[in-house]
Length: 78
Length: 406
Image (cartoon, rainbow over the protein chains, first blue to last red):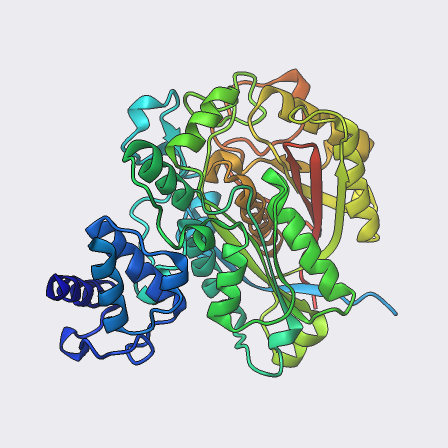
Protein backbone atom coordinates (compact mmCIF):
# COMPACT_ATOMS: atom_id res chain seq x y z
CA UNK A 1 0.00 0.00 0.00
CA UNK A 2 2.85 2.36 0.86
CA UNK A 3 4.13 2.05 -2.69
CA UNK A 4 0.77 3.04 -4.12
CA UNK A 5 0.65 6.05 -1.79
CA UNK A 6 4.16 7.10 -2.78
CA UNK A 7 3.36 6.72 -6.47
CA UNK A 8 0.23 8.84 -6.16
CA UNK A 9 2.14 11.47 -4.19
CA UNK A 10 4.87 11.67 -6.81
CA UNK A 11 2.30 11.94 -9.59
CA UNK A 12 0.50 14.79 -7.81
CA UNK A 13 3.71 16.68 -7.09
CA UNK A 14 4.71 16.33 -10.70
CA UNK A 15 1.39 17.43 -12.21
CA UNK A 16 0.45 20.17 -9.73
CA UNK A 17 3.80 21.59 -8.74
CA UNK A 18 5.86 20.77 -11.81
CA UNK A 19 8.45 18.77 -9.86
CA UNK A 20 10.40 16.26 -11.93
CA UNK A 21 9.23 12.82 -10.78
CA UNK A 22 12.76 11.42 -10.91
CA UNK A 23 13.84 13.89 -8.24
CA UNK A 24 11.21 12.69 -5.80
CA UNK A 25 12.35 9.93 -3.48
CA UNK A 26 10.91 8.44 -0.32
CA UNK A 27 13.69 10.25 1.56
CA UNK A 28 12.93 13.73 0.14
CA UNK A 29 11.91 16.43 2.56
CA UNK A 30 9.23 18.91 1.56
CA UNK A 31 11.78 21.68 1.95
CA UNK A 32 14.18 20.00 -0.50
CA UNK A 33 11.35 19.78 -3.01
CA UNK A 34 10.60 23.49 -2.59
CA UNK A 35 7.25 22.95 -0.87
CA UNK A 36 6.12 25.45 1.75
CA UNK A 37 3.60 24.70 4.50
CA UNK A 38 0.60 25.57 2.30
CA UNK A 39 1.90 23.32 -0.49
CA UNK A 40 2.25 20.41 1.91
CA UNK A 41 -1.24 20.93 3.33
CA UNK A 42 -2.59 20.99 -0.22
CA UNK A 43 -0.74 17.76 -1.04
CA UNK A 44 -1.96 15.93 2.04
CA UNK A 45 -5.52 17.16 1.40
CA UNK A 46 -5.44 15.73 -2.13
CA UNK A 47 -4.17 12.41 -0.79
CA UNK A 48 -6.78 12.34 1.99
CA UNK A 49 -9.38 12.83 -0.73
CA UNK A 50 -7.85 10.17 -2.96
CA UNK A 51 -7.65 7.51 -0.25
CA UNK A 52 -10.70 8.68 1.70
CA UNK A 53 -8.93 9.04 5.03
CA UNK A 54 -8.35 11.77 7.61
CA UNK A 55 -5.02 12.64 9.14
CA UNK A 56 -5.47 14.47 12.47
CA UNK A 57 -4.09 18.04 12.66
CA UNK A 58 -1.65 17.05 15.40
CA UNK A 59 -0.07 14.43 13.10
CA UNK A 60 -0.23 16.68 10.04
CA UNK A 61 1.91 19.32 11.71
CA UNK A 62 4.72 16.77 12.18
CA UNK A 63 4.82 15.67 8.52
CA UNK A 64 7.83 17.28 6.85
CA UNK A 65 9.05 14.51 4.52
CA UNK A 66 7.63 12.20 1.87
CA UNK A 67 8.26 9.19 4.13
CA UNK A 68 6.38 10.77 7.03
CA UNK A 69 3.48 11.55 4.68
CA UNK A 70 3.42 7.98 3.29
CA UNK A 71 3.54 6.54 6.80
CA UNK A 72 0.84 8.90 8.05
CA UNK A 73 -1.52 8.04 5.21
CA UNK A 74 -0.79 4.29 5.41
CA UNK A 75 -1.52 4.38 9.12
CA UNK A 76 -4.78 6.23 8.57
CA UNK A 77 -5.84 3.63 6.02
CA UNK A 78 -5.42 0.74 8.43
CA UNK B 1 1.41 71.54 5.70
CA UNK B 2 0.09 72.37 2.27
CA UNK B 3 -1.82 69.52 0.60
CA UNK B 4 0.27 67.67 -1.95
CA UNK B 5 -1.05 67.29 -5.50
CA UNK B 6 -1.83 63.72 -6.59
CA UNK B 7 -1.62 62.54 -10.17
CA UNK B 8 -2.45 59.39 -12.13
CA UNK B 9 0.51 57.84 -13.94
CA UNK B 10 -0.83 54.40 -14.86
CA UNK B 11 -4.09 52.61 -15.57
CA UNK B 12 -4.92 48.96 -16.14
CA UNK B 13 -8.23 47.39 -17.14
CA UNK B 14 -9.52 43.94 -17.82
CA UNK B 15 -13.22 43.83 -18.61
CA UNK B 16 -15.78 42.65 -21.12
CA UNK B 17 -15.23 45.93 -22.93
CA UNK B 18 -11.49 45.49 -23.31
CA UNK B 19 -8.52 43.48 -22.06
CA UNK B 20 -6.39 46.59 -21.49
CA UNK B 21 -6.92 50.33 -21.14
CA UNK B 22 -6.56 51.11 -24.85
CA UNK B 23 -9.03 48.42 -25.94
CA UNK B 24 -11.44 49.47 -23.16
CA UNK B 25 -11.30 53.14 -24.14
CA UNK B 26 -11.46 52.56 -27.91
CA UNK B 27 -14.53 50.34 -27.58
CA UNK B 28 -16.10 52.84 -25.19
CA UNK B 29 -15.60 55.78 -27.55
CA UNK B 30 -16.98 53.71 -30.45
CA UNK B 31 -20.01 52.77 -28.27
CA UNK B 32 -19.35 49.04 -28.78
CA UNK B 33 -20.95 47.48 -25.70
CA UNK B 34 -19.39 44.52 -23.89
CA UNK B 35 -22.86 43.28 -22.89
CA UNK B 36 -24.11 39.99 -24.34
CA UNK B 37 -25.02 36.43 -23.33
CA UNK B 38 -22.80 35.44 -20.40
CA UNK B 39 -20.83 32.26 -20.55
CA UNK B 40 -22.06 29.89 -17.82
CA UNK B 41 -23.30 26.32 -17.82
CA UNK B 42 -26.23 27.31 -15.58
CA UNK B 43 -27.53 30.27 -17.59
CA UNK B 44 -30.69 28.33 -18.55
CA UNK B 45 -31.61 28.36 -14.84
CA UNK B 46 -31.32 32.13 -14.45
CA UNK B 47 -34.03 34.52 -15.65
CA UNK B 48 -31.64 37.07 -17.12
CA UNK B 49 -29.34 35.85 -19.87
CA UNK B 50 -27.10 38.85 -20.55
CA UNK B 51 -24.05 40.11 -18.74
CA UNK B 52 -20.63 41.62 -19.31
CA UNK B 53 -18.34 38.75 -18.36
CA UNK B 54 -14.78 38.17 -19.54
CA UNK B 55 -14.79 35.23 -21.93
CA UNK B 56 -11.99 32.64 -21.87
CA UNK B 57 -9.91 34.47 -19.29
CA UNK B 58 -6.58 32.80 -18.68
CA UNK B 59 -3.77 34.55 -16.79
CA UNK B 60 -1.16 31.92 -17.68
CA UNK B 61 1.86 33.73 -19.01
CA UNK B 62 1.02 36.86 -17.01
CA UNK B 63 1.07 35.23 -13.57
CA UNK B 64 3.29 32.26 -12.68
CA UNK B 65 1.45 28.96 -12.28
CA UNK B 66 2.38 28.46 -8.61
CA UNK B 67 1.05 31.93 -7.83
CA UNK B 68 -2.09 31.43 -9.92
CA UNK B 69 -3.01 28.44 -7.77
CA UNK B 70 -3.21 30.75 -4.74
CA UNK B 71 -5.63 33.20 -6.37
CA UNK B 72 -9.33 33.13 -6.99
CA UNK B 73 -10.53 34.71 -10.23
CA UNK B 74 -11.04 38.17 -8.67
CA UNK B 75 -7.44 38.24 -7.45
CA UNK B 76 -6.11 37.08 -10.82
CA UNK B 77 -7.98 39.87 -12.61
CA UNK B 78 -6.73 42.42 -10.08
CA UNK B 79 -3.11 41.34 -10.55
CA UNK B 80 -3.45 41.48 -14.35
CA UNK B 81 -4.87 45.02 -14.21
CA UNK B 82 -2.28 46.13 -11.64
CA UNK B 83 0.57 44.82 -13.80
CA UNK B 84 -0.69 46.84 -16.77
CA UNK B 85 -1.01 49.99 -14.64
CA UNK B 86 2.44 49.61 -13.08
CA UNK B 87 4.06 48.88 -16.47
CA UNK B 88 2.48 52.02 -17.90
CA UNK B 89 3.63 54.07 -14.92
CA UNK B 90 7.13 52.63 -15.35
CA UNK B 91 7.61 52.04 -11.62
CA UNK B 92 9.56 49.22 -10.05
CA UNK B 93 9.39 48.57 -6.34
CA UNK B 94 12.52 48.20 -4.26
CA UNK B 95 13.82 48.74 -0.72
CA UNK B 96 13.55 52.49 -1.19
CA UNK B 97 9.89 52.78 -2.14
CA UNK B 98 8.27 49.48 -1.03
CA UNK B 99 7.16 50.81 2.39
CA UNK B 100 6.17 54.09 0.81
CA UNK B 101 3.56 52.56 -1.48
CA UNK B 102 -0.02 51.50 -0.75
CA UNK B 103 -2.34 48.94 -2.33
CA UNK B 104 -6.05 49.52 -1.76
CA UNK B 105 -8.54 47.30 -3.59
CA UNK B 106 -12.31 47.45 -3.60
CA UNK B 107 -14.50 44.39 -3.87
CA UNK B 108 -18.03 43.76 -2.71
CA UNK B 109 -17.83 39.96 -2.47
CA UNK B 110 -14.24 38.77 -2.84
CA UNK B 111 -13.42 35.23 -3.93
CA UNK B 112 -16.88 33.85 -4.58
CA UNK B 113 -15.71 31.24 -7.09
CA UNK B 114 -13.68 29.45 -4.40
CA UNK B 115 -16.59 29.79 -2.00
CA UNK B 116 -19.00 28.41 -4.61
CA UNK B 117 -16.74 25.41 -5.18
CA UNK B 118 -16.84 24.72 -1.43
CA UNK B 119 -20.65 24.74 -1.53
CA UNK B 120 -20.63 22.36 -4.49
CA UNK B 121 -18.17 20.01 -2.78
CA UNK B 122 -20.08 19.92 0.50
CA UNK B 123 -23.74 20.21 -0.48
CA UNK B 124 -23.88 18.70 -3.95
CA UNK B 125 -21.02 16.25 -4.03
CA UNK B 126 -21.43 15.33 -0.35
CA UNK B 127 -17.68 15.53 0.15
CA UNK B 128 -16.44 15.82 3.69
CA UNK B 129 -13.74 18.37 2.97
CA UNK B 130 -13.08 21.46 0.88
CA UNK B 131 -9.95 22.69 -0.86
CA UNK B 132 -7.26 23.69 1.68
CA UNK B 133 -6.77 27.07 0.00
CA UNK B 134 -10.48 27.98 0.22
CA UNK B 135 -9.82 30.58 2.92
CA UNK B 136 -6.96 32.52 1.26
CA UNK B 137 -8.75 32.35 -2.10
CA UNK B 138 -12.08 33.60 -0.72
CA UNK B 139 -10.89 36.40 1.58
CA UNK B 140 -11.84 39.85 0.24
CA UNK B 141 -8.28 41.13 0.81
CA UNK B 142 -6.96 38.44 -1.53
CA UNK B 143 -6.63 40.86 -4.46
CA UNK B 144 -4.77 43.52 -2.41
CA UNK B 145 -2.50 40.94 -0.79
CA UNK B 146 -1.65 39.23 -4.06
CA UNK B 147 -0.81 42.54 -5.75
CA UNK B 148 1.40 43.36 -2.77
CA UNK B 149 3.16 39.99 -3.04
CA UNK B 150 3.55 40.12 -6.83
CA UNK B 151 4.99 43.65 -6.77
CA UNK B 152 6.90 43.58 -3.47
CA UNK B 153 4.85 46.47 -2.03
CA UNK B 154 5.10 46.67 1.77
CA UNK B 155 3.23 49.82 2.83
CA UNK B 156 -0.48 50.14 3.73
CA UNK B 157 -2.30 47.26 1.98
CA UNK B 158 -6.00 46.60 2.53
CA UNK B 159 -9.37 45.89 0.97
CA UNK B 160 -12.40 48.16 0.98
CA UNK B 161 -15.88 46.69 0.77
CA UNK B 162 -18.69 49.18 0.22
CA UNK B 163 -20.73 47.28 -2.38
CA UNK B 164 -20.96 49.26 -5.64
CA UNK B 165 -18.91 52.19 -4.31
CA UNK B 166 -15.93 50.02 -3.25
CA UNK B 167 -13.52 51.20 -5.94
CA UNK B 168 -14.27 54.89 -5.42
CA UNK B 169 -13.71 54.47 -1.70
CA UNK B 170 -10.44 52.61 -2.46
CA UNK B 171 -9.21 55.29 -4.89
CA UNK B 172 -10.33 58.07 -2.54
CA UNK B 173 -8.50 56.48 0.39
CA UNK B 174 -5.32 56.13 -1.69
CA UNK B 175 -5.64 59.74 -2.88
CA UNK B 176 -5.87 61.00 0.69
CA UNK B 177 -2.98 58.82 1.89
CA UNK B 178 -0.73 60.36 -0.75
CA UNK B 179 -2.07 63.91 -0.36
CA UNK B 180 -1.47 63.72 3.38
CA UNK B 181 2.09 62.49 2.97
CA UNK B 182 1.54 58.97 4.34
CA UNK B 183 2.93 57.47 1.12
CA UNK B 184 4.17 58.67 -2.24
CA UNK B 185 2.62 56.03 -4.50
CA UNK B 186 -0.41 53.74 -4.54
CA UNK B 187 -2.06 51.08 -6.63
CA UNK B 188 -5.81 51.36 -6.16
CA UNK B 189 -9.03 50.26 -7.80
CA UNK B 190 -11.22 47.22 -7.58
CA UNK B 191 -12.00 43.73 -8.78
CA UNK B 192 -15.17 41.66 -8.99
CA UNK B 193 -16.27 38.32 -10.42
CA UNK B 194 -20.03 37.94 -9.84
CA UNK B 195 -20.80 35.16 -12.33
CA UNK B 196 -21.47 32.24 -9.98
CA UNK B 197 -24.75 30.36 -9.78
CA UNK B 198 -25.61 31.32 -6.20
CA UNK B 199 -24.68 34.97 -6.67
CA UNK B 200 -26.63 35.34 -9.92
CA UNK B 201 -29.60 33.65 -8.22
CA UNK B 202 -29.35 36.29 -5.49
CA UNK B 203 -29.42 39.08 -8.09
CA UNK B 204 -32.33 37.37 -9.82
CA UNK B 205 -34.20 37.37 -6.50
CA UNK B 206 -33.75 41.08 -5.82
CA UNK B 207 -35.32 41.96 -9.21
CA UNK B 208 -33.08 44.76 -10.41
CA UNK B 209 -31.38 43.07 -13.36
CA UNK B 210 -32.70 43.91 -16.83
CA UNK B 211 -33.90 41.06 -19.05
CA UNK B 212 -32.26 42.58 -22.14
CA UNK B 213 -29.69 45.29 -21.63
CA UNK B 214 -28.77 48.30 -19.54
CA UNK B 215 -30.44 51.53 -20.74
CA UNK B 216 -29.50 54.26 -18.26
CA UNK B 217 -31.75 57.36 -18.27
CA UNK B 218 -33.98 55.84 -20.99
CA UNK B 219 -37.70 55.87 -20.15
CA UNK B 220 -37.97 52.15 -20.93
CA UNK B 221 -35.01 51.16 -18.73
CA UNK B 222 -35.51 47.91 -16.84
CA UNK B 223 -32.49 47.68 -14.61
CA UNK B 224 -28.82 46.90 -14.50
CA UNK B 225 -26.62 44.34 -16.23
CA UNK B 226 -23.92 42.63 -14.19
CA UNK B 227 -20.32 42.95 -15.29
CA UNK B 228 -16.97 41.66 -14.09
CA UNK B 229 -13.35 42.63 -14.19
CA UNK B 230 -10.79 44.85 -12.60
CA UNK B 231 -9.53 48.38 -13.03
CA UNK B 232 -6.39 49.64 -11.32
CA UNK B 233 -4.77 53.07 -11.14
CA UNK B 234 -1.29 54.10 -10.13
CA UNK B 235 -1.50 57.31 -8.12
CA UNK B 236 1.48 59.25 -6.94
CA UNK B 237 2.42 62.61 -5.58
CA UNK B 238 3.14 65.17 -8.27
CA UNK B 239 6.63 65.51 -6.83
CA UNK B 240 7.26 61.77 -7.15
CA UNK B 241 5.91 61.67 -10.73
CA UNK B 242 8.02 64.64 -11.80
CA UNK B 243 11.12 63.25 -10.15
CA UNK B 244 10.70 60.03 -12.11
CA UNK B 245 9.87 61.88 -15.31
CA UNK B 246 6.61 59.94 -15.48
CA UNK B 247 3.95 60.50 -18.13
CA UNK B 248 1.05 62.06 -16.24
CA UNK B 249 -2.42 61.01 -17.37
CA UNK B 250 -4.58 63.11 -15.08
CA UNK B 251 -4.95 64.64 -11.66
CA UNK B 252 -7.23 63.61 -8.81
CA UNK B 253 -8.28 66.62 -6.77
CA UNK B 254 -11.22 65.74 -4.55
CA UNK B 255 -13.05 62.99 -2.72
CA UNK B 256 -16.36 63.04 -0.89
CA UNK B 257 -18.20 60.29 0.93
CA UNK B 258 -21.46 60.05 2.83
CA UNK B 259 -23.90 57.50 4.16
CA UNK B 260 -27.65 57.86 3.59
CA UNK B 261 -28.50 56.24 6.93
CA UNK B 262 -32.00 55.62 5.62
CA UNK B 263 -32.62 52.47 3.56
CA UNK B 264 -30.50 49.41 2.76
CA UNK B 265 -31.21 49.51 -1.00
CA UNK B 266 -33.20 52.65 -1.88
CA UNK B 267 -30.89 55.61 -2.54
CA UNK B 268 -31.44 58.90 -0.74
CA UNK B 269 -31.00 62.00 -2.88
CA UNK B 270 -29.59 64.07 -0.04
CA UNK B 271 -26.73 61.60 0.54
CA UNK B 272 -25.79 61.69 -3.16
CA UNK B 273 -25.92 65.49 -3.26
CA UNK B 274 -23.80 65.87 -0.15
CA UNK B 275 -21.15 63.44 -1.48
CA UNK B 276 -20.84 65.46 -4.72
CA UNK B 277 -20.64 68.72 -2.73
CA UNK B 278 -17.95 67.26 -0.47
CA UNK B 279 -15.87 66.16 -3.48
CA UNK B 280 -16.13 69.67 -4.96
CA UNK B 281 -15.19 71.27 -1.64
CA UNK B 282 -12.33 68.82 -1.09
CA UNK B 283 -11.00 69.78 -4.54
CA UNK B 284 -11.52 73.51 -3.90
CA UNK B 285 -13.60 73.95 -7.04
CA UNK B 286 -17.00 75.45 -7.80
CA UNK B 287 -19.87 73.47 -9.32
CA UNK B 288 -19.70 75.64 -12.45
CA UNK B 289 -16.20 74.35 -13.22
CA UNK B 290 -17.42 70.76 -13.75
CA UNK B 291 -17.95 69.81 -17.40
CA UNK B 292 -18.70 66.10 -17.14
CA UNK B 293 -19.99 63.58 -14.64
CA UNK B 294 -19.53 59.86 -15.05
CA UNK B 295 -22.82 58.88 -13.45
CA UNK B 296 -23.55 55.98 -11.17
CA UNK B 297 -26.31 55.42 -13.76
CA UNK B 298 -27.29 51.85 -13.00
CA UNK B 299 -30.24 51.82 -15.38
CA UNK B 300 -32.74 51.21 -12.60
CA UNK B 301 -35.81 53.43 -12.47
CA UNK B 302 -35.07 54.67 -8.97
CA UNK B 303 -31.33 55.41 -9.28
CA UNK B 304 -31.33 57.33 -12.52
CA UNK B 305 -34.23 59.62 -11.58
CA UNK B 306 -32.69 60.26 -8.16
CA UNK B 307 -29.24 60.91 -9.62
CA UNK B 308 -30.41 63.46 -12.18
CA UNK B 309 -32.46 65.26 -9.50
CA UNK B 310 -29.39 65.31 -7.24
CA UNK B 311 -27.20 66.69 -10.03
CA UNK B 312 -29.77 69.43 -10.74
CA UNK B 313 -29.87 70.40 -7.07
CA UNK B 314 -26.10 70.53 -6.72
CA UNK B 315 -25.39 72.29 -10.01
CA UNK B 316 -28.48 74.48 -10.45
CA UNK B 317 -28.63 76.17 -13.87
CA UNK B 318 -25.16 74.80 -14.68
CA UNK B 319 -26.76 71.34 -14.94
CA UNK B 320 -27.94 72.45 -18.40
CA UNK B 321 -24.34 73.06 -19.48
CA UNK B 322 -22.69 69.87 -18.30
CA UNK B 323 -22.87 66.35 -19.70
CA UNK B 324 -23.36 63.15 -17.75
CA UNK B 325 -23.12 59.61 -19.05
CA UNK B 326 -23.35 56.10 -17.67
CA UNK B 327 -20.66 53.83 -19.03
CA UNK B 328 -22.32 50.90 -17.22
CA UNK B 329 -24.27 50.57 -20.45
CA UNK B 330 -20.95 49.47 -22.01
CA UNK B 331 -18.92 47.60 -19.33
CA UNK B 332 -21.85 46.45 -17.21
CA UNK B 333 -22.23 46.97 -13.50
CA UNK B 334 -19.14 45.30 -12.11
CA UNK B 335 -20.23 46.03 -8.52
CA UNK B 336 -17.12 46.58 -6.38
CA UNK B 337 -14.97 47.07 -9.50
CA UNK B 338 -17.34 49.27 -11.45
CA UNK B 339 -16.18 52.66 -10.22
CA UNK B 340 -12.58 51.74 -11.07
CA UNK B 341 -13.71 51.42 -14.72
CA UNK B 342 -15.58 54.70 -14.40
CA UNK B 343 -12.64 56.54 -12.83
CA UNK B 344 -10.45 55.40 -15.73
CA UNK B 345 -13.13 56.42 -18.26
CA UNK B 346 -13.27 59.87 -16.63
CA UNK B 347 -9.48 60.29 -16.69
CA UNK B 348 -9.41 59.26 -20.37
CA UNK B 349 -12.32 61.64 -21.15
CA UNK B 350 -10.41 64.58 -19.65
CA UNK B 351 -7.15 63.56 -21.31
CA UNK B 352 -8.60 63.01 -24.78
CA UNK B 353 -11.35 65.63 -24.84
CA UNK B 354 -13.95 62.98 -25.62
CA UNK B 355 -17.00 62.29 -23.44
CA UNK B 356 -17.96 58.59 -23.40
CA UNK B 357 -21.56 57.79 -24.35
CA UNK B 358 -24.54 56.30 -22.60
CA UNK B 359 -25.27 53.29 -24.83
CA UNK B 360 -28.63 51.64 -25.55
CA UNK B 361 -30.62 54.86 -25.06
CA UNK B 362 -34.08 54.70 -26.66
CA UNK B 363 -36.71 56.91 -25.05
CA UNK B 364 -36.49 60.29 -23.38
CA UNK B 365 -37.52 60.32 -19.73
CA UNK B 366 -38.76 63.67 -18.39
CA UNK B 367 -37.26 62.84 -14.99
CA UNK B 368 -33.81 62.50 -16.63
CA UNK B 369 -33.93 65.69 -18.67
CA UNK B 370 -30.21 66.43 -18.96
CA UNK B 371 -27.48 65.81 -21.59
CA UNK B 372 -26.64 62.14 -21.14
CA UNK B 373 -24.44 61.83 -24.27
CA UNK B 374 -26.83 59.29 -25.86
CA UNK B 375 -25.49 56.49 -28.05
CA UNK B 376 -22.41 58.30 -29.41
CA UNK B 377 -19.37 59.81 -27.75
CA UNK B 378 -18.93 63.55 -27.98
CA UNK B 379 -15.84 65.69 -28.46
CA UNK B 380 -15.69 68.30 -25.73
CA UNK B 381 -12.69 69.73 -23.97
CA UNK B 382 -13.35 69.98 -20.29
CA UNK B 383 -11.13 70.75 -17.34
CA UNK B 384 -12.92 69.14 -14.39
CA UNK B 385 -15.10 66.05 -13.97
CA UNK B 386 -16.76 63.97 -11.27
CA UNK B 387 -17.26 60.21 -11.04
CA UNK B 388 -20.23 59.14 -8.90
CA UNK B 389 -20.81 55.89 -7.02
CA UNK B 390 -23.92 55.31 -4.89
CA UNK B 391 -23.98 51.85 -3.35
CA UNK B 392 -26.46 49.51 -1.72
CA UNK B 393 -26.27 50.14 1.98
CA UNK B 394 -26.65 53.86 1.26
CA UNK B 395 -22.91 54.45 0.81
CA UNK B 396 -21.89 57.24 -1.54
CA UNK B 397 -18.40 58.05 -2.84
CA UNK B 398 -17.57 60.72 -5.40
CA UNK B 399 -14.19 61.51 -6.96
CA UNK B 400 -13.19 64.78 -8.62
CA UNK B 401 -10.61 64.80 -11.42
CA UNK B 402 -8.78 67.51 -13.32
CA UNK B 403 -7.33 67.40 -16.81
CA UNK B 404 -3.56 67.25 -16.56
CA UNK B 405 -1.99 70.49 -17.66
CA UNK B 406 1.60 71.11 -16.72
